[in-house]
Every structure is written in structure tokens, then in C-alpha cells.
Image (tube, rainbow, N blue to C red; front, side, top):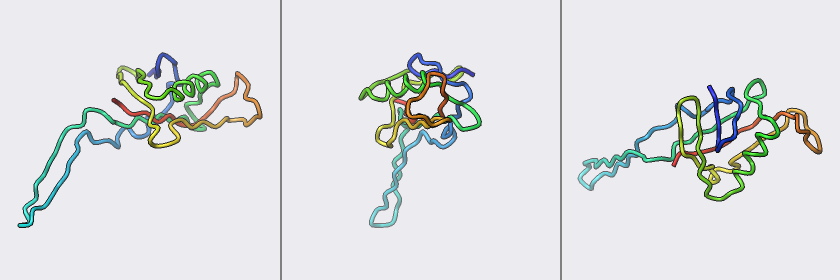
Length: 127
């Protein structure tokens, strides 16, 4: 299963960690003075969180992948195409839940080498 973000191919072994933690329905319940509940419900049009995680044992990212994702994340309001297997999404970074991108090198160095690998996560949301 291939994964790409904005045309940058990511490791297909990254994990969509919050895939099953989303409800497309918003609901509000208010109770009248007489005790009767009034229920308001609406389907969401976007906002599904997509957190892609590279763990120490799978999904490593190369330095070039990390550089590309960090470049995207530095652009306010940028909308990107995310493709995971046969699914496509229009996404933005979740800057309201900082950090939107968080990477750590497998081998820490003062200056990362082009062949270094990274773990971490990319926080996105559908729009």
C-alpha cells in the first residue's frame, strides 16, 4: 500500500494511528426547563484527523522525505493531496495541535547525513 503526501512518496509501512478514533457525526444535547432533551445532530464535512506514524521498528522516513514534509508544514494554509493505498484525501497540517510534524533521527548527529533515517509523526486533517 503506497502512501504519498503532496507528491512526496512516504514509507508505505507508516501507521495511520487514529484511523478508528473518528466519528463523522457532531451532536449537542440541551435540556429544557421541563427536563425534555433536545438533540441536535449533524454530519461533519471534514476535520478527520490523520496521524501518520513512523515507529522505531517500522515505517522509517529518509532525510529527503522528512525535508519535504517539513517544507510543506512551514507553509500556512497549504492544502495537499494525501493518498493512502486506493484512498485519497485533501488535507492540511494540524498546527492547532503542535507540533504538526515531529521527527527524531534513528542515529542522532549534529548534522544529519542524506542516508539517515527518522521516526516520528505527521499530524494532518481532512478538509
